[in-house]
Amino acid sequence: MSTKIITGDCIESMQALDEESIDITVTSPPYNLKINYNKYKDNLKFKDYLDWLNNVFIEVYRILKPKGSFFLNVGFSSTNPWIAMEVARVARDIKIKNKKTGFVLQNNIVWIKSISINDTTYGHFKPINSPRFINNTFENLFHFTKTGNTKLNRKAIGVPYMHKSNIKRFHAEADKRCRGNCWFIPYETIQNRSQKGEHPAIFPEQLVEWCIKLHGYDKDTTICDPFLGTGTALVVAKKLGINAIGIDIDEYYTNYTKKRLLAYDNKNKNATRKNTSQT
Image (spheres, one colour):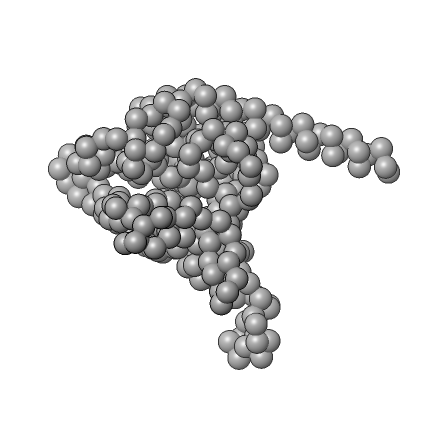
């Protein structure tokens, strides 16, 4: 298992990677919503933003294996609700030397961050104080592949049948069915921004873990996150024992990721020592 952290421009850094060398890409680019990142300026003209993402996705396409998976998490705002769909369109319509050669949207997943069932609310969301808009409680998670024919390990993140009679009825081998395309994954409760690496837009470890498990993995699998942020994708990759490459233009976040991975390693070493002493 190898873990590589690169501080640099994501396009230039991916250009240095071998063609068709990545099994899974899980990432979330800036949303161009004037979010306050540490270094990156999230306020491009919208056409420039989409043109930039076209060049990013060209490299993601180039480094992804023929049967690889590209999981793209994109949010939106109430005043600009089209962002996620426009970004997905760019991935579909990649242009290389004026020729269209884009991704296929194999699965359209909804990441539910908060949900209210009857009078009970689960998860967390940022309230919107407006007479026009309702609270945003989900983001898009687009699962792109090169052909639309990538086989998945659907039951790796499956759920038990509620009605056990369906196990026999649907000729299931075990008490587990496909989870579907609505994933309820709430954020962990935090008290201040420092607990998430001073980053304004992170995703939970479970989101990355489910993407990797859905695609399927082994010790030779390699994941890449070209917008590394606080390193969540690399932490999950280490926990699952797979190879990982993370890229970020901001040295603050790549350094934070290194510290986060070191803390994870030290925690494991201490746990191993404790278990050894008890035996």
